Length: 395
Length: 113
Image 1 (spheres, rainbow over the protein chains, first blue to last red):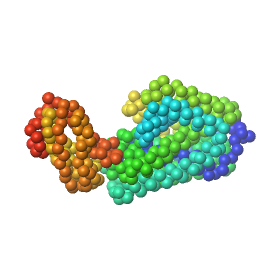
Image 2: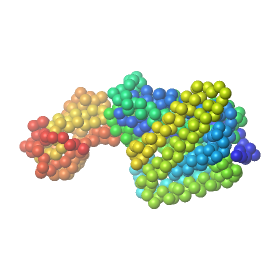
Image 3: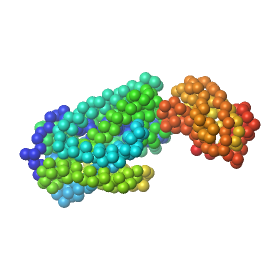
């Protein structure tokens, strides 16, 4: 594994914070796009509790990443962790599985943005979606190839704006309906709540992306893990606070909408907030795409030894090619890409947590907290795998 | 025919299919948000009650022909959130076409989509 220290310069701390927070959704997209669906319609009356418990459950994977980061920080990220724990052969399986997952996920996400999200708020774009798809993929790839540092500054600005929009949306709901303490109680469907908690927890899974910046952190792994855990904690706090008021939408179709935050803004505050919220939410999804792109370049650098400029070109070429291929059947291709992408993602994560469990068990005095964290984190990823394989809309 | 509006659903007392005729929908808003009842379909283009608050009532009289009608709340976002039902009007309907009169002209059976 080569981290190419000569190529990867330390990043300013604010850029790493912006990157790490962008990886979590981005946060506005979690609230306005993903969370209601993850919680599910039957548990929506307890969305505050579900989100809080989901975030708490994610401390298990976070603990594993925290402890791994204390031992190694590199552009290999999770691959580097696995290599340290169980050796090169298993680590390569883990690393390449992760690459497959996120290459497909990039292709999936750009199609979701252009074909699902944009038309919800801006129906006029419908005739132009094919051009927008290619334009978005080419534009994002070009920006990341020629001006990655500038994109990182944009991510930092974006997360600040996202936080403002989250507070604005929650403020509009609270202004109309008051604070919803009932959102933190167990509603009528405890089974749905339990499933919602696990689903909500999995929304934080992209929190591992900043680990691939391990070769660019001035303070090494100890600084990186503070940023990774701190950003997840911050996002969890603001997400719980801004999601809780959405309990008033229990019994509605909110959980089944493509862009539920847009509808909430429309109902509570009118078209202006709704349009801005849609724009920033879509931008936040694109921020996550940028983060995925950057993490892929670092991992490929670690796996192949190629320089980061070269891996940027490789990822850019693959991304644009996948976007072009998706035009064959753009209405359906994302649902075909998301399934293998998520299967690969959860398998790659299970390998990481199993590797950590093995490493922890080999110690002379294994810490129970290490074994428990590895077991819970691995179990959570297996739950994700089960959801992908068994539930709609993946099949 | 009684129609109850609430956050965010429309409950219609009555059946799946109505016979052609003139109906009066007696609309109650059980809230908490302000709502209205709007109807779209053959010969009926966006006829609606005023938007009124929780606890209020309003009547809406429309003449329904053969075809499919959309009953919804036109307050922005409410239809998307679930305040939207479809009723089919056809010769198989069991409702009376004898004119207005609330529940007296309602169809029987279930099956609103």
